Amino acid sequence: MTDIKLLETGILDGDRMVLARAITLVESKRRDHRKSARALLDRLAGKTGDAIRVGITGVPGVGKSTTIEALGNRLTSAGHRVAVLTVDPSSSRTGGSILGDKTRMHTLAANPDAFIRPSPAAGTLGGVAARTRESMLLCEAAGFDVILVETVGIGQSETSVADMVDFFLVLMLPGAGDDLQGLKKGVLEIADIIAVNKADGEGRMAAERAAADYRSALHILSPRSPTWSPPVLTFSGLKDTGVDALWDQVLLFQSRMTASGEWQQRREQQRVGWMWSMFDTRLRTALQDRPELQALSHQLEVAVRSGQLQPGSAADRLFEALLSREV
Ligand code: GDP
Image 1 (cartoon, rainbow, N blue to C red):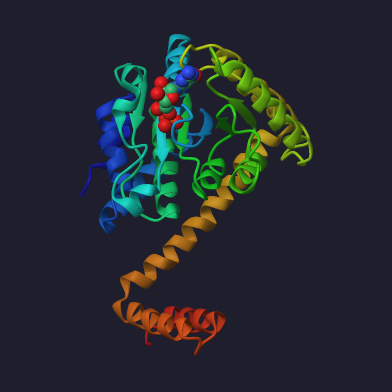
Image 2: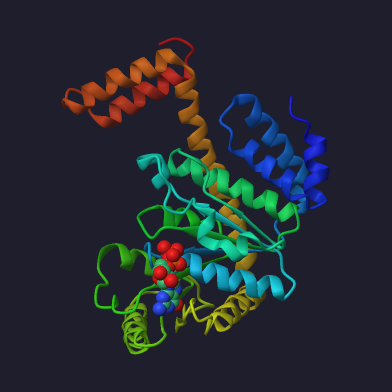
């Protein structure tokens, strides 16, 4: 049995080793570990929630780690303690991780006021996101007052991250503004700011052009909040120009949203959303825990695949079987 009290004290003392151990506990799939993790999070509940939570996304190569380094080091110099977490479900598909490598941010990794934790290993997106959320709470209890949650600009992981943070920063490449279809359009809808990176040297003009394109694209979308129209900025993570202006926008957002009550509202909605997504995950685990239900679900999948059974009826059968103790 894990000593919860010891973990609790260590975390509240800001002990990084203990924090790392607690995150490992939260990430564990073992049933007894899950129980201990739950107990630990319950005990820490009153000590969480004080940080600014910022999500950062963008395609590989856009400059996420460069930007996080520049921003993270700036923030720690100003007296903040910064935790960097990642949601990278690619590890579940490929066995490798795009974002998992700590060496991507080597100066920040060596910074005593920063804490970098790669994405939890393999799992479904829902599972990975849930673990990251819980790790975020542990970091807050350990005194980190800025949480940066990084994700790759592919697919649904962006929505999961947007659902766990206060502010969602979307990084774009210069010259990519002419392709606003599909995926990128979806991400514009959840962005609280669009920041075009690499606005340095020869890239500057292209970045400005891309920014203008994104501004007109945003114009036709209705903003997520009546209080905030997402601005479009250009900056250079590499040269560290405009990174401070980016953070100013985060603070402006915080003060306006706090004044309107939306800051708190978003958090409340998020908490309820987490409850339901964890309930969904719990249902799936309940299926996996009962071998007879696994066998039934395989049979049902076969029947659905061949068209013998409608997906809705199969789902009903499975649900009824889950509620009963016999199949
Ligand atoms: P990530 O995959 O999104 O984390 O991107 P990285 O931060 O690893 O950056 C990818 C490449 O772009 C690296 O070679 C960086 O040096 C370069 N890069 C990042 N930010 C900038 C920038 O502001 N300007 C320029 N010119 N290059 C940059």
